[in-house]
Amino acid sequence: MWPNIKPYIYVLPTAGVLLILFVGGLIEGLIQSLGYFPAAGQYGFSLDYYRQLLSSSDFWDSLILTFRIALLSSLSAGVLGMFVSVCLFMLKRPGSGRKNQIWQRFFQLPLIVPHLVWAYLMVLLFTQSGWLSRILASLGWIHHINDFPVLVNDSFGGDIIFTYAWKEAPFIALMIYPVLLRIHGSWFEASRVFGANRWSFFREILLPLLMPTWISSSFIVFAFTFSAFEVPFLLGVTYPRMLPVLSYNLYTSGGLEARPEALAVNVILAVIVSILGVAAYRLSQRWSMDEQGGW
Amino acid sequence: MRRIGHFMHAAVTIILLIAIAIPFIPLFFSSFSHGWRWPEVIPHAFSLRAWVYVFSGNSGTWEAVWTSLEIAFIVTLINLLLALPAANVLGRLRFRGKWLIEGLIYAPIIIPAFISVMGMYISFIRLGLTDSVTGVIVAHIIPTLPYMVRALIVSYSTLGFQWEEQGQMLGASGFQRFCYIVMPHLMPGIVAGASLSILVSLSQYLVTFLVGGGQVMTLPLILFPFISGGDPAIGSAYTLIFAGMAAFALFLMDFLLKRYYGKKVTVHL
Image (spheres, rainbow over the protein chains, first blue to last red):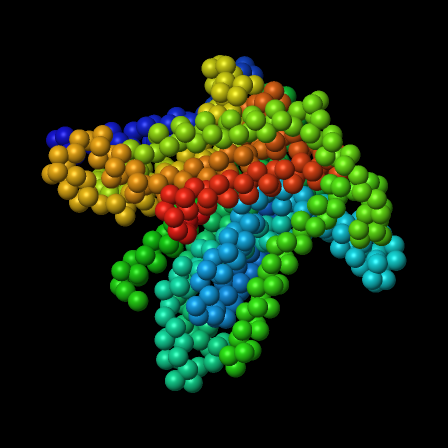
């Protein structure tokens, strides 16, 4: 009996804390979003806040914007990360291990730098009076500050996408690099014997092997960019806002009676992100089952 | 063909280095600038005004750095104590319902912590946790604990049971086995988990703002007004300090690991 119960006792501290703080918070948020909010003197359960939300164009504009930004961010980070990783792998010099490790540290820098810092770097580079515009002006390519396009705080969200692409590409690269390292150099030579060039080696051999990890890590980036707050808070425009910023504004700017609506946004966010998380997990599981099949 | 390969490798590496390093150049200039007007690529005059302000007594920088580090270290210590037993069984045993526990532990990586914190804000008020460092520490556990457990699970899963069994046969007590067998093996995982936990805690903005209510000023909170339309020079100086603190955490982790093993060990982030 004792050995059967041991694992549960051991996981109890971590699981208990997460159940109370994380799941407890989610459930409390869900209950309040359904209208049970004693702090504002509301005791009845209803779907009014969801109805209100789903019938407002603010919400739908936010949702569409959030989807578009998350999709474009994760796609560009994914493509960029894959490109960098495969380039470094295919062009790798044999026997330069130590030097490579120093570079790898350096490539981790975007992962370590906080999002707020990275977003501000984009502001300094790409505003109309930013560094890029200054460089173009001194090269004589533009003559007035307004000749430089509005890239930061524009309603398309290009600055947010660019920040995420730049910041998350190293994450994708780091996730797929271990898979690349398991591919033997002899495989490339073998494919050469059968007449493959670098491109067809990539398409026929590397791509299928990388696909599961690439998709699952791109899903993680999608889920993250879908629900992260700091970057759109700094770089976004007042309308339309990304969902986390919309929730924050409803939560802080209105009175107590506006809070259930913010929490309803949060519940919708949590549901979407969880679906994405489960999808990412499933994809990586399928991959590790294939892995036991051996290659 | 081979020489072209070398050339391409060098070219790709250099382009990447530039892409990572270039954004920091205007940040550096901006923090030292003295009236940096538009077409100037390099400021015409430099001044230490922003840095003098940042390090002056009344800017609250030192308090903010100290508060940030205090919160990050206490959160990490709590995480370590909570995560050690959980990682022990999750890394080495199979048991019924394990996937459920793993799902619970990994979920906060995907679902952002502010959703939980907004949900239980009223309870936080009732428990007296708002506007206090204690409350911020409690809230920071949500996004950081999963990373600690994850790092320790990796370490435990390569440990197995045989070494401890051998120690037991040779007469080592439970405490001795933990100190001399388990701890040395876990060290890389502990260092990796701790630095991730510190990094994630340092970069929290919204959760600290919601729970701290403007009373608990950490570095991201003190930085934000300056970078969102405030004084760009001071904002840049703060941003450099913030980035430096995060980079220092990674450097420290690297240094500790190298000291411990006397050789390079790669840490999987």
